[in-house]
Amino acid sequence: MKAYINETNNIIEPFNDHPRDWLIENRFLSTIQKNNLSSLGIEYVHISNQETLDEDDEYISFDDSLYFTKELLNEFITRSRQKKGCTVCALKSGITTQRTVTNVQNIKKTPDYIAYNLYYFPEKKFREESSPIVIDPDKLESGIPMPKHMCGSDIYQK
Image 1 (cartoon, helix red, strand yellow):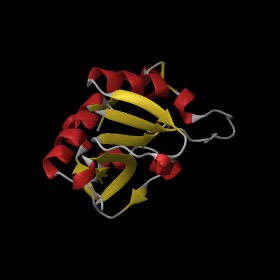
Image 2 (cartoon, one colour):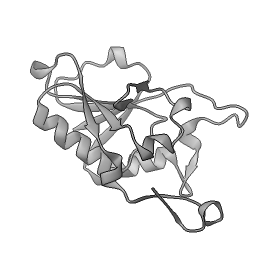
Image 3 (cartoon, helix red, strand yellow):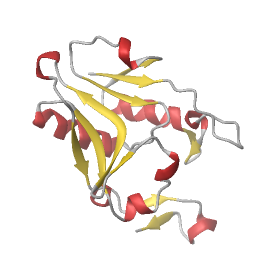
């Protein structure tokens, strides 16, 4: 399987940084993405235009500013393969989505879930309109890593 990483020109003011250069747990977002993909045996390719992509085999596609864990990515791909159709990754609305900064991300909000720019495409013959795979992030993680001075411990408990 391949992953196509959509290169964006997003610059976050006033920091003048691209999100892929942000530090999360003292690692660049781009490094986290590549490590999570590699750990699941997924090759990755950077692209500048999703519309020019003509791939017959299954693949995933996401923006270069998207953070995801290996566990979430694995869950999304597993459930997408079972569905045998085009899917978009969505997180169930709840504590995790309330306590993260969704309003500065390129997302689609509904009352029940938040859809992110992480897409799964099966083999070409099975492609049709995409449907959401709703994942409950509260079941995948017990806390969010945080600097100790912000919440009194290394993990922010939900």
